[in-house]
Image 1 (spheres, one colour):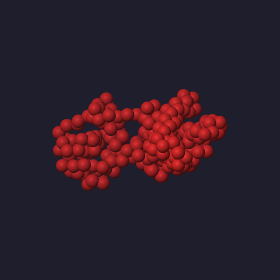
Image 2 (image 1 turned 90 degrees about the horizontal axis):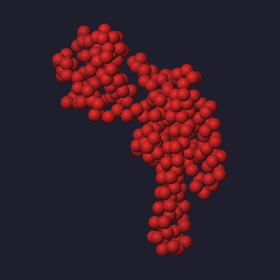
Image 3 (image 1 turned 60 degrees about the vertical axis):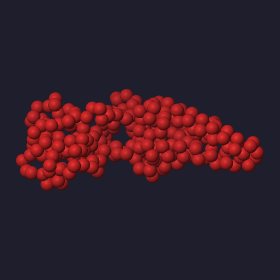
Length: 263
């Protein structure tokens, strides 16, 4: 199981959480502080408000202004207010439109993508810390937002009540586009590829470890490459029954090729 620790307390407010995988690969995630998350909240609040207004006007028109449209309006209000964040975070891998605009993402405390259950739970509990806006009672929303802010300031990972309940945290996303894909075509790597399946499935931690290593290996001397790649290459070699005495650097590069390039 991955363990997490924080940097020293003299870090800036948007600090960094360190996660260590069983393969001894260390990942660093910049944590999103309260202020950055608040701007994302304002964007989502505006979207929810606009959606409620549009839905209400549409239902009024469809009901020809009669009182029969009042009930559906309250239903639409409830569904949008309570469902927007949970739906977006479950479907779009931890992001609402506001979080996407600010480069934020909800992940589990282990640094892996959240599940649908976690997305729903953190937003249900969000009714207690102001994340779910009460458009009819803005004064109540403001009071509950103070509860959420207090919770974030008292926890090392800036977790509000919903995050504590669901075991999640909000990080600043580090985008890695496929435009930066590196093709490793060294003869030893190409010779090892037939030993691997055409497509190797890798979780987010393994994929990130492979990507980070290959993107930085050119700066390292050969001995240092072997030292760094060994912890990752050893369990992969055993799992896929690769030939013995293959350099760890070659193994990691071959897996990188299969995970990101395929072929």
